[in-house]
Length: 430
Ligand code: EPZ
Image (cartoon, rainbow, N blue to C red; front, side):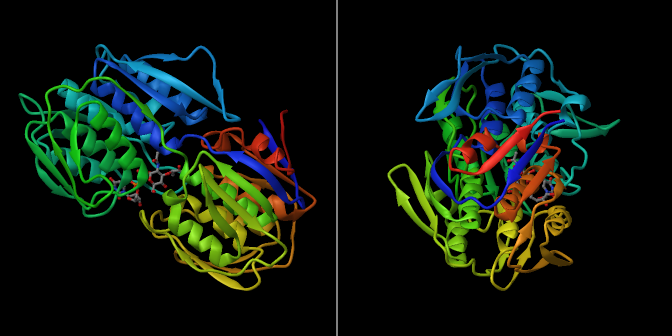
C-alpha cells in the first residue's frame, strides 16, 4: 500500500493549479442519468471517487467516453468526459458499489424520476459519522414516491405518470438531499419548492448544468429552490467549477509552511469565510485574475476559533486542515464541529506529531506549540489525511502518512503540486 513521505521545513513558493471540484463532479455525473442525450462535462478531476462513480454509472447503462487523452491545460490535467445514457439498463444500485462511496446513493433521484422505479442499496455508515438518509427519503416521499426498505435496499416507486411537484422544507440542511430532490423534481409534474435547501456552490453548479439541459430552476444558491417540472431533459456541455476545498487546503498549507503561492483556476468568492479566517490567522490573501495569491512571511500564526456550518459558514471539509494549522499557533484556539458527529479522528494522529489538543464534546481545544516533530501517522478519511500532510510540511524531520488511498479519493496529484512549490513530498510504493 502506498504511503506519503514528507520532510518538513521548506517554505512553499510557486503556482498550484486547482482542479475541478470532486463534490460538484459527482452529482453532475449522476445528472447524466436524467437524459438520453449526451452530457459533456469539462474539467473533471482525475480521482478515485470519480473512477468509482464511472463504474457505477456504467452499471446503469451510461456510456462513457473520455477524450482520448487528458488535456494539459494551463499546467493542470483536466478531462472532458461525455456521458450518454440512451436507456437505463439496470435500475438497481447494488450494495457492493454503493457501500464504497456514499454519493452513489444519489442515483436514486434520477433513476426514480426517469424510470418510475428503482432499487438502491442503503449506503451504511462511514468514518466521519452515521450519516443517515432520512432527509432523502422524506424529500422523495413529498414528491409522491412510495419507498420501502427491504433487506438493506430502498425499493422506490413513483406514482403512475411520474413524480408530482410539491412543497417540502428540509428540517436540516443537507447537500446530498438537496441535489437529489432537485434532480428528481426536474422531471416531476408541476412545481416543486425546496425549503431550507443547501446553498453550497456545488448545488448552484448542478442547478446551472440542469438548466443547460432544459430544466426550469430558480433560486439555487439561496435557501429556497423552485423547480418547474419538464417532460424531458436534453444533453448539454458544462464545466465543473473549481474545487473550493482543494483551494482552501493549499491556502492553509502555505499559511502553515510559510511562503508565497499563486493558486490558479479558482475563485476567492467560493470560500469567503475560510479565507477571512486565514487572514485573521496571519495569511495575506489577494485575488488575482483567475485565482488568488497566498503569503505568510515570518510572522507567527495567530490563534482563531472556528465553528463549522453549512455554506456560507466555515466548511466542515476544511476543519481538519485548519486544526493542523492551529497546532502551530501562538496561543489557544477552539474548533467546533457542528455537521458531523465523529469528525475528529485526526486529533490522535496530530498528537503523534506533538500537537496539544483536548476534546470536549464537539469542540477541540488546541494549544499552539512552537514545533511539531515528524512521525508515522495514519490517514482515516479524506480531509483528515490531508491535514496530516499540512502538519508534516511544518514538522521537523520525516512524517510518513499511511493509508494514502483516502487522499487519492479527493486530491489530484497532491505530491506533484506541493513538490513543484519546493516541498519534499513523495509517494512511497511498497
Ligand atoms: C456532502 O456530503 C459532501 N460530499 C461532504 O464532503 C461534505 O462534508 C458535506 O456535504 C457537508 O458539506 C459530497 O458532496 C460528495 P450532508 P453529504 O447531507 O451530502 C446529516 C468530503 O470530504 N444528514 O450535507 O453526505 C448528515 O449526517 C465529503 O469531500 C441527515 O441527518 O452531507 C450530516 O450530519 C465528506 N440525514 C448533515 O446532515 C440525511 O438524510 C450534513 O450532511 C442526510 C444528511
